[in-house]
Length: 209
Length: 209
DNA sequence: TAGATTGTTAATCGATTAACAATC
DNA sequence: TAGATTGTTAATCGATTAACAATC
Image (tube, rainbow over the protein chains, first blue to last red):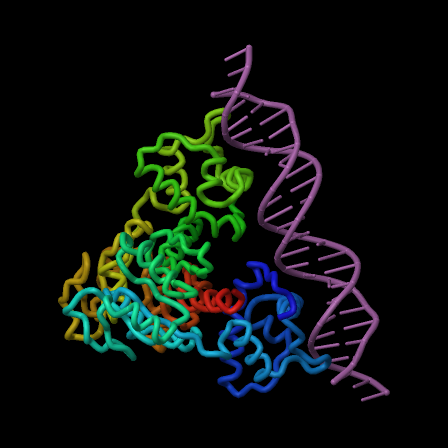
């Protein structure tokens, strides 16, 4: 990686680059110019070249970008070229909905296991995994060393569980609870999955319209 | 509203202002300064005053902001001072998880009804609503005039349903499908609820760490 | 070779921060 | 009155866009 201080503006556009290049790749498209990408994404060609140049030189003068190579590079930036793994904690409605419907591999993660304290849920097969007893979580983490944990537990329990996960070596938490997790000082990456912020933005725009 | 051309940067901070001021209000906090808000939110006091000034003058020199008034103003910006209503279309796992667990009123919307085509689901009570037959949707929309529709149908059906909703007078769509909806030219506000983008950002940051 | 398109430098534009007069 | 803190103007900083030499 050329530059290790990538701005938030650039980071926020990475998912759209990923979606776009995956689509081109699926359509067997071989090459694409920054102008074409710009049109599809609603950015300027200049911005796209500027963004890519934070990470390296992926194109060829007079040609544009080879889709296969560009896809490889963008997946590399997102950490997808080496498989990352995840566990999910808290198999309520939201947890189960994610296990059943969410495309984790497309997001760059393989789901290894899911945990809950409710004995009536333990043993149930949901999506690709079988719900396990929360008591066995430590053992499983120590064995399989997952990179990331999806946190879909009740808000009141989130902070303590997050702390436990950090101590067990989990490196990232995708937090679906409203709780503030204080594990960033332990080197854990926390990403807030905030649906309500999206809805509030919708409300604002509806109110403006 | 003072200024009707609010930048995306400001809009993206509105949800955090809302969360913060709701919390202060729940704690019976009476007044707050931009410096205190800044500390709680991790912004600068200057930015907060600058942001608020896009919408009006909510404070008092030498005093700060009255929490109750500030809460009223921020809720007003987000369109919460007059009740907005919603329906949900597609009661699969995700749809049901939202109906059961998501706090729509906190997000500014009251859920009026939910629809599905699956006869085995119709009549089932989920959260505050009872799943209705998709065939009856038009009638219900014409009667109750909901402002917004939560779209949790399979991706392949999303575009057509969105178009139908637009024609029936729905003014906003909270889109949980990956489909691109072409209804913005019909004056419909579309907000993408993209969990995968959040996960991709997590992957990037994990890869950088 | 001629046309196309990159990566990068320079110019512009917008967003954030600092400073401060106004005033509660 | 004196201290505090706003709203706003000016200064700075960063992000986006435009321009263009390099070169496929």
